Length: 132
Image (cartoon, rainbow, N blue to C red; front, side, top):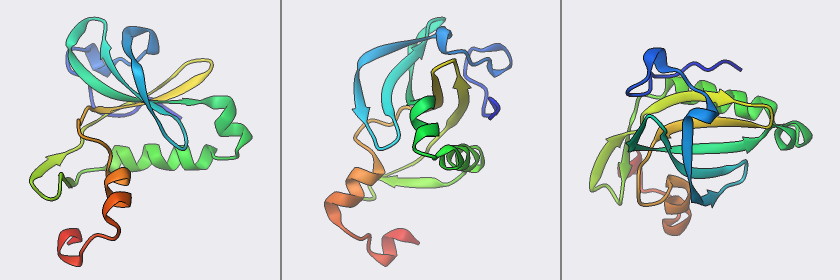
């Protein structure tokens, strides 16, 4: 897995190293990892959503291909998402991937207000008009 992705604002060449980021203590627990609010230590004013996954858990659960596919999808993602019941159209920015000895990380734009999966579970199936 490489570190491809969009350049992080304020970084030379989109440099991505876990040690260059600070983290808030609160996190959202997901199926494959946790998502935390993070920022670059060089620019604390811009916040990111940083998904953190343990390498050993990914290997043990035989989901390496899932994580590689998620990375490929994020790299190719260019689609406006409808958020908050269709009231706001935003495009999720993907800033890249990084790893250290124990974890892999995905860095995306921080969109407040919950995730699409939780929203989908709360309302059931999306109406056809909303998905086209």
